[in-house]
Length: 325
Image (cartoon, rainbow, N blue to C red; front, side, top):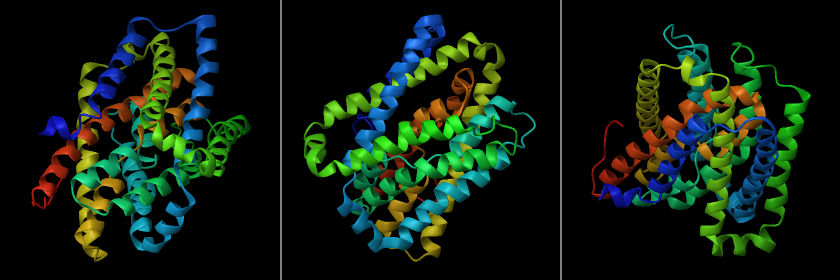
């Protein structure tokens, strides 16, 4: 049963791990690396263009009708998570590179596809999940770079956000997203009719960024700096972070008086972080050699959240109401 619940994610997880392994064994170097960088930039722009094309104006209008729920999801995503991320950076046993990755993870928007899928399985408010996840990603285009500049620069976890980085964000993320959204009326139907091809482009772009980033990190000695013990600690911290946030979202749902359908939306949309947005953003916001280490916690968290949410969604589907993640 669990296999069926997250079967949509399994091939991508395997592809993601295979890409990291390929970058470890055969990292791209020299002129080839420069070519891959250009292709990656194009892939990122295409990725956000498709994200914009999938978002209808009606979804934005409908979303405003459930403002308390969406604001609570956004508060969890862009306030609670970052505060926890800042706390993690003070752990003495965590190396600066992995601490930066954990903090970056907490600054990202929520996922879209899996948040909606798990909300549907758990019999939650699917329409509200679509709006919340879409809003989170739309706001994240601006909020995540701003939080990186505010928190990661202040803690010394990243280089200062330069004019070139801001320009790249505008040209590679915001502009394609806005253009795609403006063309929703013309190509939105095509995008929805060809979901398989769109998903292929979407995930292919992510894998391309991961391969390029990990190649640069491997060349710079990533796996010499990160031990097996550090990887085990990273997985433990990702699990702990997810448990804390899921527990908090359930408490917030009760505090705000949400019915069960809306509380499910808060649980799944408020506790997840987007690999699809995070990997391209890291490629723009950080030096190439630093990106591999930065996105390592995100890759682990992505898989942990899928497994945990699949189990919890199944419990909701069968009438259980878990008190904790």
